[in-house]
Image (cartoon, rainbow, N blue to C red; front, top):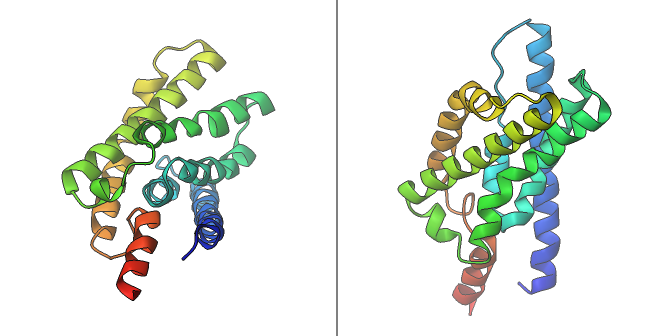
Length: 186
């Protein structure tokens, strides 16, 4: 598969994953309000993590787009919603940016590396949310509060990623996946 076709597939894949992340976030918010629950759970970050392993830093867009429905249900000002839901969510991509273009199959192929990667992404997300809370309210406990509130989601994200890694082609570096496919065809 040539680079142009891989690029088209990447944007199609990221578009589909973004839709799923946004749908998950929307459904979670609607159910939270419908049932008057104090418990919130969404698969949008798990979908983002999968996208970041598949496509690197470009997968961060899935998390940011997945956070957009939260803006509609928020009572913050528009600037506060953009900061907390969009900009702060972008911090989840810091590990992907730092890892760069290296083969992400090394992460996806090892349970320990995959767990560390998911935890690092979650810590960066919590740092982004904590910074946003500090800028919006002046409270310095945003990181700790967000981390505590989403600890269960972190555990579920680790489990989901580990389970999905068993299926070939779901959690892997897609650039290498296509190149390996071409090598087997020749």
